[in-house]
Image (tube, rainbow, N blue to C red; front, side):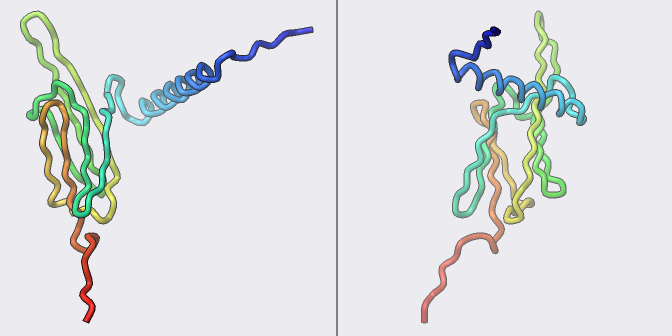
Length: 136
């Protein structure tokens, strides 16, 4: 008779499954033109009455290294730098893209980098903002 051992802890199985998918998607994204070493910064997407807010974590990135573009309804944030200082080399490459809802006014997007967090303000178009209707 053959004994089959099952994982004693379900949490370990979930971690193994997560690791499997992380490796699979990393390999997939490299095959789709994303170069090795490009990191996706953590991001939060919030909605207010008149704006969407996007917070991206870019630790140690100077604002001169950040490039933000909107093209065909896709917002792309990229930060890339390679610099050699006295006894060390500083290198990073971040990239993250978001498909924008039709309700965003792409011409009025603003950005602010403070304490390693990039805050993008994406104003909603006038037609998408809530409005009050007076009763006569």
